[in-house]
Image 1 (tube, rainbow, N blue to C red):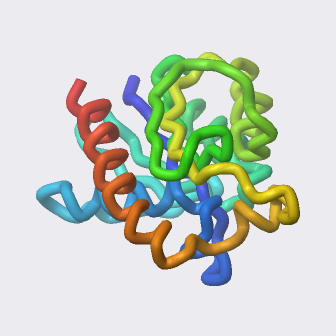
Image 2 (cartoon, helix red, strand yellow; image 1 turned 90 degrees about the vertical axis):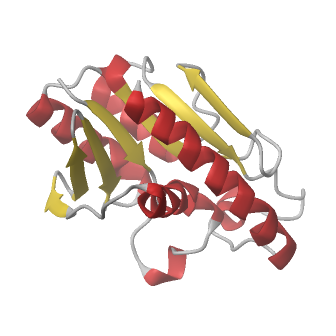
Image 3 (cartoon, rainbow, N blue to C red; image 1 turned 90 degrees about the horizontal axis):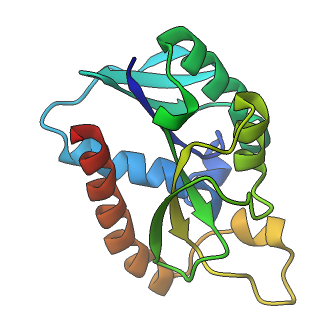
Length: 173
């Protein structure tokens, strides 16, 4: 049974560089670090590639339906929730922070809520990528669907690099 590493994001060019697409940005950085580029295939309402006993998955549903893709991939590969790692943005962590944990609250994150709903548990690993909290004058949805400032983008480059290294460690364990 392979491990499944899920990178959350939203499809569409308008979302490409937004805070909510941190998972996809970590995946992009990870692919730069791997010795060979893999062929991504379309299945499970997403794109996936397999490396040895690890499946990398980028759901192509919108964030709030990511669990559909995760559930289908788990069923196909026989992956248990405990062997799933979800890489996602998190407003509860300061910008640039990274935290790996198992379980925990969903923090209002619709992608995580969908994964929990479709797996029937919150017993999966999460690699949380801090994007900071929005100012009181900005709605959370507008904030996470917004782009990073230039200063934040430079700061997040190191964060994405470090997060990709964490994913490499998960893949090698």
